[in-house]
Image (cartoon, rainbow over all chains, first blue to last red; front, side, top):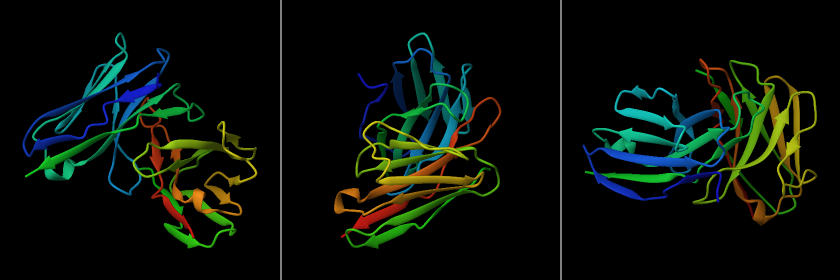
Amino acid sequence: RKEVEQDPGPFNVPEGATVAFNCTYSNSASQSFFWYRQDCRKEPKLLMSVYSSGNEDGRFTAQLNRASQYISLLIRDSKLSDSATYLCVVNKGVSSASKIIFGSGTRLSIRP
Amino acid sequence: GAVVSQHPSWVICKSGTSVKIECRSLDFQATTMFWYRQFPKQSLMLMATSNEGSKATYEQGVEKDKFLINHASLTLSTLTVTSAHPEDSSFYICSASIWEGTNQPQHFGDGTRLSIL
C-alpha cells in the first residue's frame, strides 16, 4: 500500500462546477499536510496547507480527518485555469528535515 | 513569499557529459534542500536530502556517485549528474522549506529539464 494515495482521475468537469478530491495517508503519526498544484511540465506550487480545523482560501477549502487518515480539497465555482494536477503532500514531521511524501496526483480538467 | 531559483531550466547534451544544476534560496536561508526527479506522467520521486555543511542523504536506489550533491552554503545546493546517459533524461526539481505559521511547506525551484542525446 502506498503511503499517500490519490485517485489519479482525470476529473473532467464543466466550468462553474464544484469538485472534490480525497487523499488518504497510511502513517498515523504524520504531522503536516499540504495541497500543491502542478501544471504540465512545471514545478509544483503550494496551493494551501491543511490544518486540523479545516481552512478556506477563496474558492478552495481543505479539510483534515485524522481519525480516518484523509485530507480533502474542495474547489467551488471551478475556472478553466483550475485545470492542473493536484498533489497531496504529507510530512511525517514538522521540521524541514522530515521526509515529505507526495501522492501521485489527481488530474483535473475544466471544460468550457 | 519564499523563492527558490533553479538553473538551468533546460539542458540538452551528449551522452557521457556531466551536468550541474544549481538550486538557490533567494530570500531565506535553507539548511536543508531536497532534490527530486519526475518522469513523464509520474509523481515526484525524492532523490536525496541536501544538508548544508554535511553529506547528502540519498534515497534507496539512488547512486550517490552518479548524482553528486554539494550544499556549500545556506543558500546554494548543486546536483551534478555525472556521465549522463539517455536514461537520466528527466525533470529535476529542487525544493527548500521555510516556516509559515505552524507549518513548513516546501517551495520548489522552476525545475531543470534534462535531455541526454
